[in-house]
Structure formats: C-alpha cells, structure tokens
Image 1 (tube, helix red, strand yellow):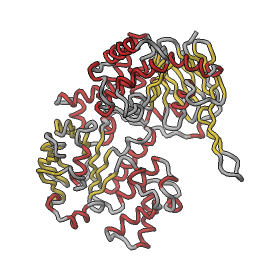
Image 2 (spheres, rainbow over the protein chains, first blue to last red):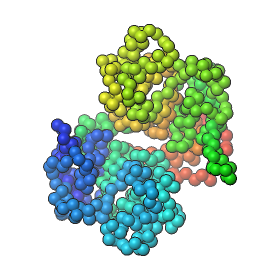
Image 3 (cartoon, rainbow over the protein chains, first blue to last red):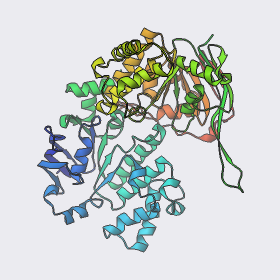
Image 4 (cartoon, rainbow over the protein chains, first blue to last red):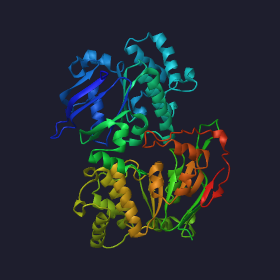
Length: 260
Length: 292
C-alpha cells in the first residue's frame, strides 16, 4: 500500500471548554488523492485544517495526537521548520478571498511573495513566474492582470489568485477550506474544474473541506464525515453516498435539497 | 386576480463618475414582469447581481423603483401615499437572509417580534404579549425564551424569530429573500419545513428569492430565472427543470454539483453571444416561457 502523504492520528483540540472541538480524529491522505472532509458549521472541520498547519489561535490548543507529513510529526517541529512547511509543502486556500488577500498589494506581488519567502525564486524571476501562474489558473490577459489589486477582480478571479498563490511552490498537499462556498454556482463549477485540472497536472493531494455533499461527490476520492468534533464515518465516496452507515451521514444526505 | 402582479418593473442605479464623465447606469432590474397567485410558492432565482433581491425590495418599496407597476390585490402600490404604504406593508412582509444582522442585538427577542404590533398600534399590551407567545409557538420557539437576546440563539432559531416577526401582522405575502441560504443544510431543511407548514396553516403566499436551485426545484410551484436584470425563463418548476431552454438556465442547471459521483456531468458554459439580451419572453410550452 502507498505510504500516506498526510497521516493525522488521534488529533484532539480543545478551546478550554469541557468538550474538545476536535475529538480523537484520525484520517490520512494519499499522494495525489482528494479527501473530502464534510460537516456542518461548528463540526470542527476548519479547526482540524488549522491544527494541521499549526495556525490555531489561543485559547485553541492541540492537546493530543500526531500529524505525520512526509514522515515527520508536524506537531513536534520547531516553529522555524514549520514555516518552511506552510505554503511550500502544504498550502491553504480559504473561503473568503477578499479577506485572505492583501487589499493594498498587487496580486502579482502577492504571488511573487509566496515564491521569494521560500527562496524558490529571486525577485525578478518571481515576477515572471507570477504571470505564468495567473495564466495557469486561467486568468485571461495574465501579464497585465498581475498589476491589478484584489478589488479590481471578481470573486471568481480572486479565488483563482488564491489558487495561484497556493500552487506557487508546487506543494504536494493543498488544503482547501470551503474554497467555493462564497461563489455563485456557475463560478463554483469553474473553480472546481480548475482544481481538478491542476491536481492532475501537478499530482496534488487535496484535503477538501466543505459542507456541500454535492461538491464532495464531484471532487473527492474518499470522504470523512465530521459531527460535533468527531469523525463519524469515512470511506470511498461512492460507498458513503450509496450506503451511508452512520445516522448523521444519512440525515445530512437526506437534508440536501432535491435528494431523492 | 393574482395576489401580486409585477409589470415592467425597472430599477436603475445611477452612479456619478465625477464632473467630466457621464454618470454610469446599472440596470439592476430591467423590465421584469410576473404574477403570483394566492397560495403560491413562487421562486425567483439567479446569481449574485442578477437583480433578484432588488426586485423583492422594489415590491415592498424598500427601494423605490424607477418605473413599472406593482399591483397588490389589483392596486398599484407604487402610487400609495406613505401612510397607505405603511398599511399595505401589514400584508406584505419580508424575511431577510442574515439572521445575525437583521435582528437588533440590544432588543429582547420578544420585543423584536412585538415591534410590528407596536408600530401599527395593534392591541393592548396584554393582547400583544399573548400574540407574541402564540407566534413563538407557531414557529417552534420556546415561549419562555421571549426575554432573551438574539445572541443567545443559534442561526436557525434566529431565522425563526425573523419569521415570527414577519408573521406578527398576519400578512398575506411573504418575501423570503435568501431566507435559508446562510443556514446549514440540516437546519435549512427544518426552516423550509416550517415555511411550508405555515403556508398551509396560514394560507400564505411566498415570493421565495434564492440562489440555490436544488432547493427551489424542491419547494416552489413556479420559478423565474433572472440574469442581468431580466427574467430569461419562467415556468412551472417541473417544466423548467426538466426542459431548461434559455442558454443561461441550461448553464446554471449544469453547474449544480450532483450527488452521484458516476452521474452524467456535462458542464454547459454560457456563451453570451448565443442569445439576444433584449429578446422578449415567448411561450415555449405549457406554463413555460423563455426569452429566446
């Protein structure tokens, strides 16, 4: 069997309250595969993502577990080494491109920054690479668009810029936290299509966090269902959609409008 | 006579671009017409910026339309005086999308629900209190919670408070503007069930504004699809979803993620050159119109 790229073992996160926000959660992601992490708001799926990257804000605290990535436990790394992982080996795409992008910085410079910070390119090269990346995420007229500020772009375009930044260093793993939730359905379809394409091209593994089972069905190889901080079910996406084993998964599927 | 008839509704937003350049005009609602019969659940769908919310607000004159007619029980509400309009709003209420920003955080929820009764000076203090308790029960909230504040409630419960407030004056028409869009699917299903139940019990008519086509297909009898300020297709949900005809409707429907990983997945890209923007709605089947 292939060695997992990411192996989350018994992760437990508390925010100081009596019940942990993430409770004994274990899952893995194989190289090149898409794992869908699905659940409703407050189920702990975003907290899980932030914990993997060690971006949790206090009072949030990882109280137990291991996050094995490329053979190392990320939770045991010194912060300096962790910084070399973030963005370069694992990158993150957020739901809200308007808040995740720097409003006073040209988008080309933001992409270039991702490269220079990790020493992947000199400033001059980074400029040229930024335009290439914008082109790769299908932004028309990329050479000119690098000079745009985020507010000059539409929501779908901004999310493409986020994808370009996430891909800048060719990380083997991308975590996408509700990447299309704020987008219209036609734009969502385009961004999902783009992610699928880039995944093929760069052999990315994708941890896709969403509340939308439709998105999971379209994108994921396997799915893990979170409910109140716990993983209640995981398995191949066809299996889970056709024969949901857990009561919560069944109710979640039944609640999807138009599900017959 | 339909309960609501919207005729050639137009709303232009004019934005000044400075002294030397001509002002730019956004045609947010551009000649929109439709009718809603008593007891109907009429869906108005479209993506952000399509003009669907502006249409809803123009009907209540929360935004003054540029031109057109809005007939409620045969009377043009756009000609009503302020006072008359206030009376008319008893019959037409709106439920907003965001249960977090649409409830005053400093008011107790009982007072929020009572407020419309106070504004319209209905009933004595005791009668109003009894009515609030009744409304709480009606929308599935604990009447004992009337002294609490909005932050003590979950998103789904807050939306129930918004619905209770909208029902306080016994309206005939509810405009639900993305009323369940911000909710988790399981909560959404509960609130939708509540809205459907209330429709039967109170003989309500809904204008259901939404971007989620899966939901609209499920609950609405007739549906209109808006694109760039115009209705491009209108029909029974059955006809529209089984035989989408306008290129935009086709693109929109094909973009919805399907729950079957092996299901047919044919994405149709919208080609704006494939249709005439000014084309009028034409009857293309039984209870089915499209601007083609």
